Image (cartoon, rainbow, N blue to C red; front, side, top):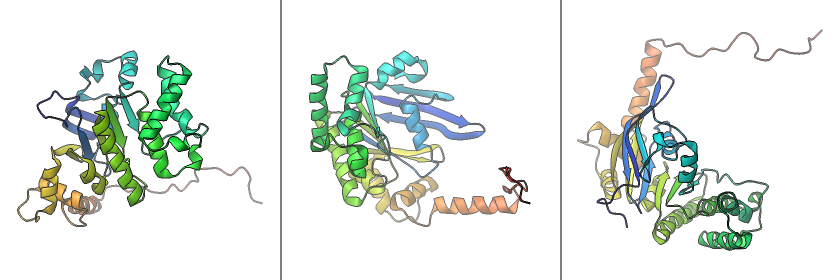
Length: 297
């Protein structure tokens, strides 16, 4: 179990990221403690995927800093970043398995690429990792031969191949039925507790979030609204909306999945204002985008 008195394993401070003139992250702060399951949530376009990409070193901040395992990622060169990447694993939303390789070959790949282990040792490690996720009996199957939930578990086994200190999950429950999703949630909890890894889970699936989180962080339009224990969000979810400030009401609407609240009101006002002041709308060109090669006679 994590302790807040510990030094953070990931530290995001005043992170700003812009794409052209659009600010996607506006001064985001987040501390992730060793051994905890941190759930980062928010609606589409809130900036949670961009935040994840900064934490794994795929993007560099325009302002602020991201510290991972005691290293400032802005100051780490490509060789140093590659060494850091061996200390964390990523479960991608789709599983991202190589279709031409068996499940076992997918899991073995990081060990073959980043270690000098004998193949016999690699084979043993692969069996151990597949056993952890309940897929040892499916080692010789190809991704096309297994279900969506099994692909997620195979991707998780591959993420575990190098015994990482941190696991990043990108929408681990997306596209799964409720029973399979609950199985993935249980697996995340079990692996975090048994292996002592730190888990960062990016999701907008509230059932999963409340099932697995130690702490939760809520992003909205590039701002970090709140980072708190799961119990804070459970209490806010169950409270009446009357008397809440806008930020708390926004969090409450999101975790409850309500159709009415600050999020939907903001969308309605924005759309109306744009229509009212006559912002230019995209128009179809009068010219075809593809010129015909044959002219009708």
